[in-house]
Amino acid sequence: MLESLRAEVAGREASVIREWTTIAAWAEANVVAGVEGAATIRDGFVDTGLPIAGDGAPLVSEFALMELVAVLGRTPDGGRAYVGRVLGCAWRLPNVWAAVMAGKLAPWRAEKIADQTHALCAEVAAFVDRRLFNASGVGWAQLDRLIAEAVLRFDPARAEAEREAAADQRYFDIDEPNSNGLAHVSGLLDAADAQDLDEAVARRATLLAALGDEASLDVRRSTAVGELARADLMLDLEGSPGRKATINVHITDTTLTGDNPMARWNDRPISAEQVREWLGGVDTVVVRPVIDLAEHIPVTSYEIPDRHRTQVELRDHTCRFPHCGRRARRCDFDHARPHSRGGPTCPCNLVPLCRRHHRAKTHSEWRYEVLMPGTYAWTSPNGFGWQVDHRGTHPLRT
Image (cartoon, rainbow, N blue to C red):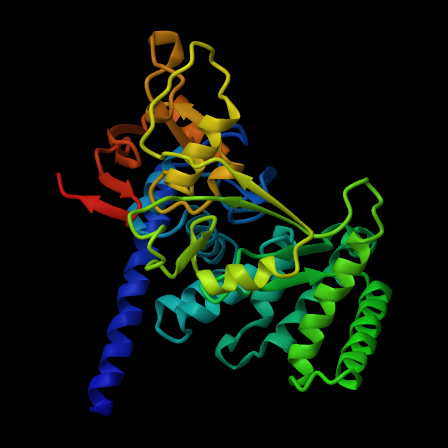
């Protein structure tokens, strides 16, 4: 059995090597001459202009890359990053690439190295590549030290500029709740701010214990963050004190009988009991009118009314491009049949597309057909097909 597993690992890595070789050949066939039309990495919703594989690698067509990523079955952002890492190894890290091709370095380790060196100039990346003569034995802490040494040695001005610009990379994100009503929080803070926040959370967690909360320290710390937030809301700095909740009511045949224990936060299923628990600490409740997701009430203007936008967001949830998971509320709304050609401004003719994929549909050969509201058949420039609906993305065999 162990010998069989070893053979499976070797076969899987051989398959990845063949995939990488094909991706590199694809890149050579889809090179563009300038940055216009080239695929670049993204920071949020803004193109940074940095090629997906970094300095010294070829610029590949943005729209062609979309088709490759879809064929690979990866999400748009994850697929761009993956192809960028492969091309980074092929063009910027020749020693790493050779080690992968010879079966001496696992592809996943090479991807890590490419990711760590992505933002470096070609000269610095080459220095790191030369030092990785035995990359299979290099730990990530050692790799970080190698990169820091290379930048300081070859580009001290850049090292200082990066130090000064590091503060611009700070962020604080709160993800959508999962089915248990819990949300993951992540962030990168100024060290002094982080220390102050840690001390405030620790003090509130200690106070909760003194008041009789018997939960674990980790749970009390998470509760303390929410209490700190609610204390700020009570300051009434903008004239609307307290905690507010907005509810979209969906009526089904089990609603009035009380047989349906499920609710939703956006497109995420949560328990009705979780909603009741949340509403117990709310000062203001806004109940929106019932929205019939099958309703069709067109308007004559090109501008999209808020009620139409909300209806489409609740129906489709995300960008409807294959494998894309960008939230619909952050997307453009495309008229499936152009308004200039008589297409109505109606939920039945509106499709949420993120800015990147809206551009692809408008300026390239990507096309879709509305099979029914919420269900779409996409065709790529080379004729590959996918159906996108509430169950996800499914290849269409043509």
